[in-house]
Length: 212
Image (cartoon, rainbow, N blue to C red; front, side):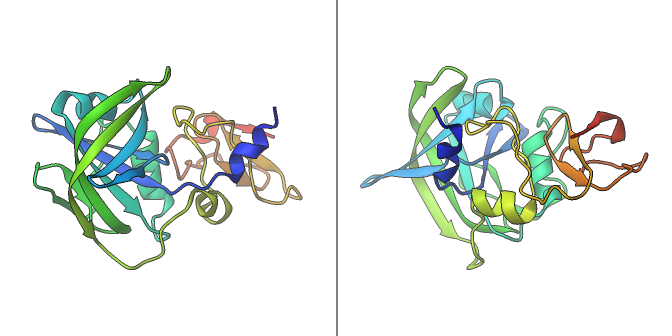
């Protein structure tokens, strides 16, 4: 099987958020998609170990936000590589709350959708959640970020919990020495790697990098 064939599938990049009690949860996904038009329904696959997935299932509601090309590594690193139990991921960004008091981003966002959980499907490592859309809003006309753009232009990595994870591949030329973060797969080019370097995606120090 040629794993590279899966890279030809088109994805976007999204933040899925939820609230359980007073706690706010959110994570990066690339699997949010419309599955029916009448009634409007979305599906999203989330890793079973994600605390956001647990919050969605506990509350029965979630919000999906479409990221734009202006979303930077700080935003993606916060929602993609940090834990909502340990960090308030929304604190550093402009947000609002939907009809269910679920937070969503208002910056670097093209649209948002509030959903009620209508069904689930166990996928092994992930759970597919079907949501009936109760609110939808356009937030900006900025170009939306595709998964391809994220890898080619933003130069981001993929967390191992993502459904599309196949090991991170650098899209940069290999003329320079490269160092790879063992946590998130981010590639730094140059030699030597500065001793005080901090990964722009997951925040790990130089001791978590290996030369490739």
